[in-house]
Length: 298
Image (tube, rainbow, N blue to C red; front, side, top):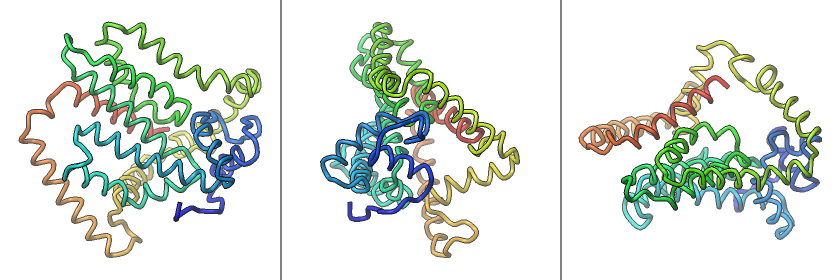
């Protein structure tokens, strides 16, 4: 809340701000399709309570940061009250990109927390022996995946394979499908009723066509693979990890050295362990690769 921004940074942020402070109207691009009704439903009550949409977005960003830490701890199977847990929490809390995203009027960070929580729950269920399959974790993962579609649709490719793994291994696959369908219906049905089916389909067609063919930065609108690769690497290396890149401050060289040193040490320790050979680890890796392909091309 102390670092709340009170100005509009970009057109998408304006659309989300208007959807909260004015009216939720997908036809008027408040926000644009797919509407992100789950995110809106998280911010709107706080706006009513606090009387400030900028503060409401910051509070949700703070909750998203806490959720991101919790999801990563669950994924790593480490308690917060441990050296590993505190190091992870500190790394997330002090990451400049994540802090900036927590104050932005956008659903990216809350979507990331939900996506990683769904991934962690699905992999936890997937690691269970067949005779002791964790149905509660499977149910949580599928429900979170359904909510994720109404929170940040573009993150769904990350969890598709883990969800399919859970459905394949569960003895109650039908119940899980129903639970997932219900978690989609809980936001999709009100959005259809509020917007109208014809209007919603029209907005979906306009936004989807524009995203892929005009302004979305996809491989169709920017086909230079070299530039796309450089931008992809920069997004991870410089923006995500805060490391050096041409034009950045020389002090970021120290960050680069730290990232490379710790990364090499971590890779060495990982190679010594057998756990990385587990099936669910590779399911998680496959999910990351599917999402990376989606992010790179589209």
